[in-house]
Image 1 (cartoon, rainbow over the protein chains, first blue to last red):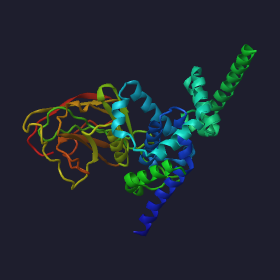
Image 2 (tube, chains in turn brown, blue; image 1 turned 90 degrees about the vertical axis):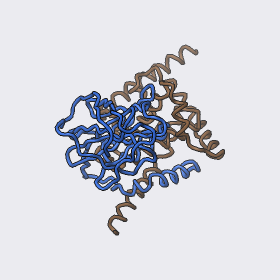
Image 3 (cartoon, each protein chain N blue to C red; image 1 turned 30 degrees about the vertical axis):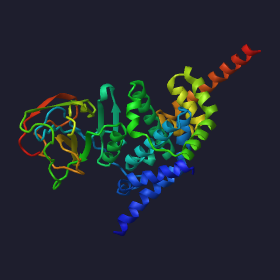
Image 4 (cartoon, each protein chain N blue to C red; image 1 turned 45 degrees about the horizontal axis):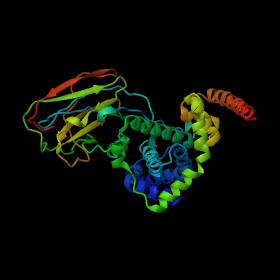
Length: 183
Length: 202
């Protein structure tokens, strides 16, 4: 029926628009967490499979699509870390690993290399509380607006702004101290 | 886009495009009813069918499904809407679990075939570990090699119930099961062992 066809095309077209607008940012998010191109590929794929699975549930009134996708990416990464910590990672990934040709591996390695500074920063932020670190990463590295980061993290926008100010101030103090120590 | 991104998009459309095509695109102002499916779980030797049912009040949450892995291969499944079935099966496959499948329960669908390996006529014991939020944990270790566990669920306007059956591969696209057991409506915590006997079709 024409109406159904229109609806179908709408969902796929809308997904494609969201995918093309966000796939690079999602890949970069994982490239800041892993140097393994297969892991980056798998987690990126997992994220968009989850996006498709819950596509109908996305409610634009609750935040932007980008914030929603980063919320999913966070959960995918948390699930990956949980599996890794349980030392089931290797077994589980045997079945789920994507086949990548050499071009794709090199392409992902390039992305991973490009995110080296961000990855180093994320590692350097390890001393921060989890939520503070995530706020800094989503806003200052991934480029989300504070309100979008709030949606992705399940926090109130005001709380995110407070954490952002507090954490940036703390980082500035740390940088100042480090510089003074080096001098 | 990069070659990887292009290839991933192609793969996603090939594997999930049909399901996505059945989805209405997100639209502002559209209320999406949230329904949670209780997935009953089963392990051990099944004759033909073991149905574990429960009724759950509508719950909150926007994802279509959730899957959490635990030590020793246990997996907690949470399905909120039928649209989550494809995704949760994909995740199960990615986790390397080839013995647990989630399918919808629909009238007119075939009843599961008898298991190829598990002995028919033997009383079965199905442990259903259900948390207060309705999620269910699957421990697939007890499923004999050569058989599979099919977890089916059905949703109505206000409630959901599910059941599981040990059967022989391949997994069907949908199944029919007996109606839900009486009583037991409402959310809450429940756990225990449900026993059933084989010999009859599911």
